[in-house]
Image (cartoon, rainbow, N blue to C red; front, side):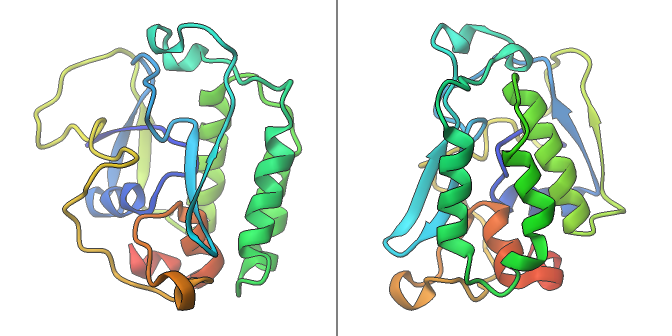
Length: 197
């Protein structure tokens, strides 16, 4: 299975990875707008709360993903961490994972791909997905449709997948919201998170 590297990917990414056991992460494609590469969906009291990492202006869609530069003139890290803290600060496991995740928002990052890869490594460790492995591709290749998941997980796209509900922070107001960022699952379910993938 081949997949695109995303910003704290939604739970479907992790579920597919767990089922496959190993994934290839695409490193040689061009950046694509309207993807989870620089955006994440977390839970808020009114439902889905999108957060986006700002990018330096230019034709990012024609650039290799690995070369896309974050616009650090904006205080996106502080804004995102505040939003995450506001949404999950009272969740059962926020304090348990805060010290692992906060440094990602305190270090300066130049490239979007590098940030997303480090975030992936941190979450993989927190989910205790020791058996599941990944490799980075070296060049862009075509894959059979049954193995190519690079375009499957996208914002505002209906997904034919049965998600296992779990208790979410704002479920009493919004009901269960499937396929949010893996952060939602981690903060709400803690060590049990992997069971819901």
